[in-house]
Amino acid sequence: QVQLVESGGGLVQPGGSLRLSCAASGSSFGYYWVNWVRQAPGKGLEWVAIINPGGDRVYYGDPVKGRFTISRDNAKNTLYLQMNSLKPEDTAVYYCTHGGARSYGMDYWGKGTLVTVSS
Image (tube, rainbow, N blue to C red; front, side, top):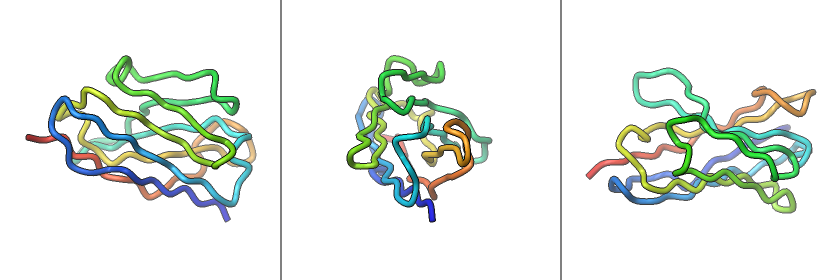
């Protein structure tokens, strides 16, 4: 059974930093492109970033480019999101997600971790 468990969310002041983690189990984690996706209160899903299986190709959505860094440790089956220079508009539930039968896609999702950026 595939499980993705996010952690590391919390309350942070504008300009601050947080590091999110996503622990994977029950899947061949190293096979997948893995995404971070977020959902702000009252809004739809927004794609944040993606990393390839080898960890050497990363892509970001424009709102987070230059501030967030996605990384992974396949030996630990863990995905990370380092978030710097946080803004109130980064407030959201953050999810990690990856494919199922294919290495890409968003078939499996965690339950998310809440990040609140506020003074």
